[in-house]
Length: 116
Length: 109
Image (tube, rainbow over all chains, first blue to last red; front, side):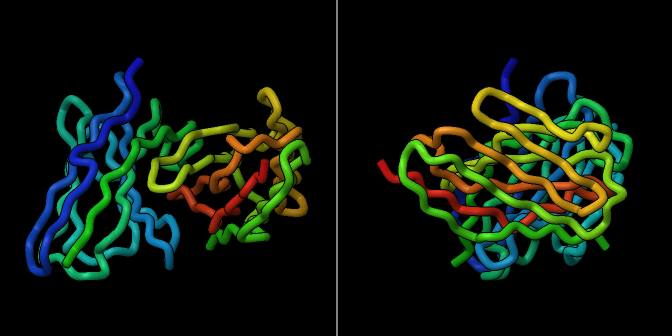
């Protein structure tokens, strides 16, 4: 069974631009979560989508948004990029979602975003 | 608010030594605890998920223990190898998955 895939793997953008990242979960998984990882802040939760609905949202500004499609694939968008948005963006999928993340989370390889 | 701490932040051991990684959490009302491994610049690989009703979970050279009452979990890696060099993170679920800061492990040949 294929794992979680994320595209693109690397991105370089300039301040003020916007970016869209894509995540394809493991086949059959309906929950997709997004995380931002930086050396200073560690892993921080962005949001979770389940059955095309955002279930939970972390403490990030409205410039960060996402969506999930009927095939469970998810995208996240960051508008008006800032230097501080440079990070590794990880998505994770799980088979079920009870709102409490009790199921094993499987992570993708991440998208490395660099904002210049 | 759940807080997860991993101490030490970094650890260096000679090959063959057993590794002991610690994870502590502030809210003991957890459903489970998950341990991950992360290689530099890569995603996370799930190692073990230990349910709140379990005290231990084993997979090969890895053994994780959980003591909810004291808010602690320990990951043991027996007979460490250079390939075990990575960052190890623990995470507990709630309305989000809360991660510790990780322990960066270096196993010297």
